[in-house]
Amino acid sequence: MLCKGQQTAAGTTTVTEWQYGRNGAVSITYDDASRNQFLKALPVMEQLKIPATFFVITGPIKGSKYQGKFVGRPVREIIKESETVPANDQNFLERCSAAGYLGYIGTISYHTQAGGMYDRGHKDRAFKLMDSLYTQVRHGEFKPGYEPCPEYKEAIGSTWDDFRKDAAEGYEIASHSITHATMPGLDEANIRYELEKSREDILRELGPKYTFSCEVPYGYENERVMQIAYKIYPALRNRMPEPWLKEIDRASKQTPGTTDKDYIQWQRGATTKTPLPLMKSWVDTAAAKNNTWLVLVFHGIDGLGYEPVSSTLLDEYFQYIRSKEDQLWVATFGDVTRYMREREAAKVNMSKNNGKITVKLTDSLDRKMYDLPLTLKTYVPSGWKKVKEIQGKHIRQLPVKKDEKGNYVLYQAESGAGAITLTKTL
Image (cartoon, rainbow, N blue to C red; front, side, top):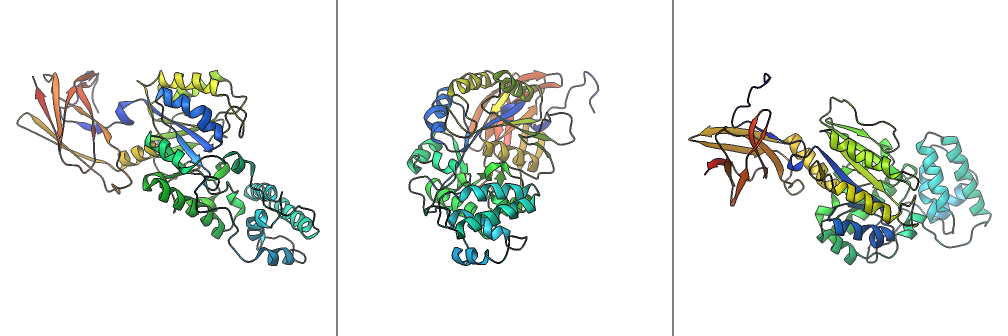
């Protein structure tokens, strides 16, 4: 431990908590891909050059190969069986999975409600609701046809060409399933279909970079669902069970405090009635700490979608976030996840010789997936006023900064890309 006033030894190198040595991180995320997110909110972000992550329902996108369907035995068999066998632990997931695909309009809401009840432990209520649905189906009380959930219908209109353009501008397009299904109410085969086939459409249309992140609809953290989803997507906004990460979900009233974890992911969901001063206070909290990742969750915009907020409010809010850019790293959900994991896995080795500092940065992660540069902080001798940094073919001149521990430089480095040399320049 350094005594007060003691200087850090030249060559001492660490990976900064956040990219560019910022105090905290902010990720702006949108769920559902309702049309006004792109018509109203995206232009605001483009003007301010602010990145974001869009968790999109892939079924409604024009050109998608995979649409919603029930994976299982013929639904007529299930309907017939329901006449004599009530819903129970053995058949509920099958019946709830099939509920939206029985061939009638209006049945999808029973799936959504029953799945939520089942997740909350209200099994008897969920079973009763399924029995009611199948009784009405047998009695012909629904009109024939198919009707998806409201979130699906509000997302109709986007094309993969639209998303290719957005991705090229730095926005992260990520999965929110095929149909916005309530996955605690699905059996494993149907969970896998919703997540794997959504991933396949994204992979085919946008490439592997955009198969990194996912949000299981409605923010569910159901353990059974999570264990399936973890095997399909490296990063879930619902939950990431990292030993070094404390998570505070958007339903919690808790605020970031002291923790023995390296990082805190603090999710906040702005709704129609959320006051702007409160939203700004979230940003202030992230900026004031050194371990907090503020993940903002938006849905509806300008009257379209769940709990819509106005694009005018977003304009003011995003300008406020931009005003804190010297303190906060604003990045996509996927990039912040990559940075944290790369930092946690990083090994830094340093040597000094003949007036030169050599730094080696390595980790054991898959470089195809984890390719984000890390920010290194290296202390240099007090007589160094300017520093030249070389890694491979990259040569940069670095300004020397000063804190209470001595003179240092900040620079971007790629893990496994060869040694980095720092030398004094005139």
